Length: 490
Ligand code: NAD
Image (spheres, rainbow, N blue to C red):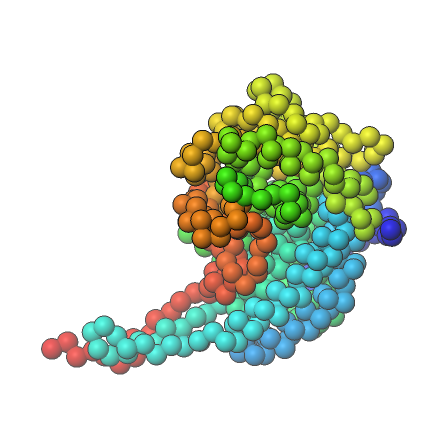
């Protein structure tokens, strides 16, 4: 087992307009390891004046008539492939920074946080090259139209702390390939990995002003959303913040993509075999310490097999290795902060008070000083209770009994969310038939892994728009129709 050493990083500048500039304010963000509770980094706390500078730089880069937005996709691809190489070269550093800040087990951080940036940059550069740029379309009335796709403009990108790199590059990939420029505002909990992005962009020769990063809090994020120099907002975070941002963008008629919260359901059918799928169950129910938007935190089990399902999930929760997120063997690390742990423990208390039965966990693991929470399984959960309706964003599962498959689908659809989900069965066709009835943006049969080649996103209060897949490119493009040849109207 290897344990990487604790970080100790100090930055005095922000990356704006291709330069490392002094922040306009004196405040600092201090990053604490949720595992050791030691300070691991200090960076400038960006202000609205820094946002003004960053938007101005992104605007200038976008408006440059021979610059990034005017290039052919092939020219941008050369730079984006170099950017990808530079991110790949920083894979381990990125993974360690992410784990150290948010408690993500390092094995997951290497794969998703370290590996996704390069893969997504290359993928979207290629999607843009292959996209038809000017389609000559025969008209319904006769004549011809030219349908063109143009980059939307300056993007304000705002991301949360749970998968800071993957969620950033789900935006950077398509927006940069489309020819947009960007101001990124990371979450205050995960500001250190964002410096890796800036260093890689600089090393790759991404033109000045195309990528700008302002570390800061909510007010700075809200200011970025409202900024008249920003044409498009790409947000990932809570439904509460997403609603506010959606309201502002509606008033301003500004395009917005919202990837928000979830309370996804795993529907276990009566023929399911679970004990041979413990890895898949872990992957869709507990990964990243329960801090994943699409997690299957509600498990719907047929009454005929209810006790067996509760036992299997309890064995899963009791069997995981909890520890330092930087240890290779750790499956569950600490949650991101004391605030987050307080919130999760508050929900565990509400579950107990509401009459649900603790089948596993329910407290803190012994011998660990950080913000750890035991993976917890609640049985006998009322589908309308608080723990079955609200997003807990921690390692807490609720097992809900059902009578018929119709009941299961109704319970699955019975929250305000619709982001992920799974169906567990030995009959794939049966699983697919049930999956089709679930109101959700994504759903898996016997496993759940987001494949970046297919669109991901939510319905209902889980969001608007899609990331991943070639579809994501269109969210950063405007469409212009040129009527070229007139129809003969008689
Ligand atoms: P959060 O909404 O509190 O913060 C997310 C980001 O938005 C942060 O950078 C924050 O500073 C900023 N922010 C907050 N309020 C803002 C406002 N009014 N205007 C502009 N910026 C604002 O969320 P969090 O606690 O950091 O992250 C957890 C949430 O993110 C969970 O609800 C989770 O489900 C969701 N999430 C969704 C997805 C998805 O793809 N659907 C992925 C990961 C996380």
